[in-house]
Image 1 (cartoon, one colour):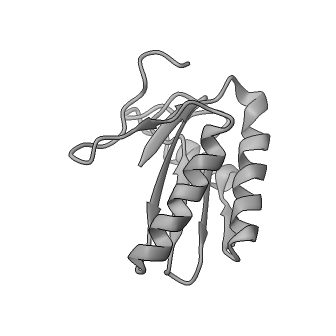
Image 2 (cartoon, rainbow, N blue to C red):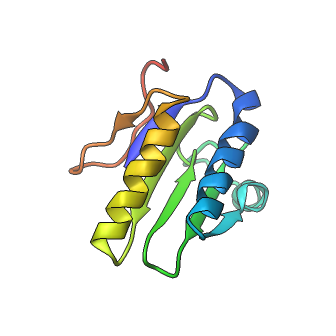
Amino acid sequence: MAQFCLAGPQEIAPFKSLMDSIAQEYQMAFTDRSGATEAELIAIGSDNFKVARPHVNIGADRNGEFSYGAGNLGMPANQIVIGFNGTNPVSSRAFSDAAVHALAAHWTLHEVPKDRGAFPLPKCD
């Protein structure tokens, strides 16, 4: 899992586009539930969390072989967390390495330690 900062809301569309392009290159089914998730979170109206606006909730899957999910739930709107998964360790690792490489060409990535979840970065760079 990794996290990074966007320069602002103007980078959300390019981020989503990049991740959709990567998904298409790897023959994955891309899903963007950002708007629906934001509406659902607002409808819940919990005081326990702040809804990032604009909200990001995207992912892609290749029949379980490998997948990713990315979003800013629990983060400031400009901070993205992305995680990778898959049933095939070899292809899953190859995909995650390629995706991280593509993301690192645009943003500074920070690895999330395996023994904890992601927390808001104190300083975006």
